[in-house]
Image (cartoon, rainbow, N blue to C red; front, side, top):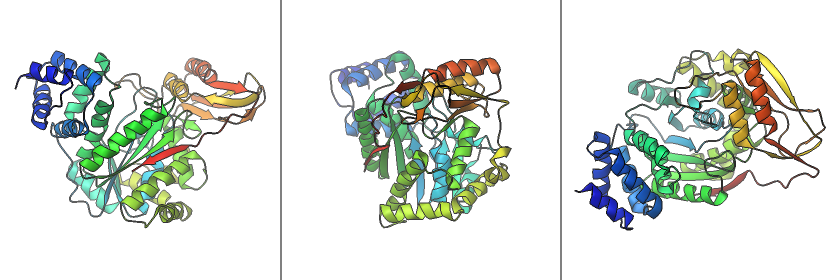
Length: 434
């Protein structure tokens, strides 16, 4: 095959065949097709798009570029969950133990945080001693014995995605819908689960800022998952403001634990119940969503979900005592109050800016090699719709460096917008795509 001819075919609006896509991806991974030709192909895809069938072929070619997880040794229904990323998104930390305590097996590969969005692996490492470097045999054994295992992504899982994303990042093609879909779903499908639940964020702190784009992404991912033979569902949720009241690794772990203890009844709990209900019905563990929610609520009320988190932490080498006593988690040296410069209702609280404030403190990464401080972050005392007096505490900064704390304070004050009237409240769960 001729690479240039295939680029011209896509540039002209033609549909590439499965064999042609396999040739292109295989050649790029083995080095026989250079960066500059794949860059041209990516730009052609950005302008012309891909059909549903082409997107499936691209995803399968990316999966075939490396290892896949064989989960056949895990008994029962295997579930994977993915979030498109946001600020304060600690959903997996609460949802996965809830689901595992309800009888489904969670065998999950997760990543680290980059930019203003956090990563599940970083948050889990707040537990002293916990490791996410797990070999294949241990991965399967823990999934069967505990019902929950979360490991870091290996370099051999979908290596084509790593190469393509790096190229997309420097060629202005990151925001191509089919390329986003294939990037996310190649890793999910390579992970071998029977049921895939997708938490698609929308708004200021999300990758997709517009609600219509978030729903379009959700529909394409669900369609691709179903075409690949997997039960797939997506929930579109709000990310105009941070999820929950804490942003920062150990702080978010504490908030997830509060949900499992039944102490937090906010949007984080609601998101866990909504996503969890979709999983339990798809996995035939509940006859309908109402019954599924009851099961999940019972897992919290009885302490089963909290105990499952402790069992999981212990199995991965962590100190399970921190589940029952979160004071054992990392704590920052300083807690600095941020006072409101005005009286009024909080109209907006920009999620991305709060995430940036956390990065300033050292709680996030600008590059994949940046060091990270697990103890720092932001505690939001006032959120959208709350009224505050001038001088009242808006937030508390948890920091280990006084200079960085002052910089983060300026970032944080810029995230708040005040008004004289309470803002119109939008639904937190925007919709479900089956």
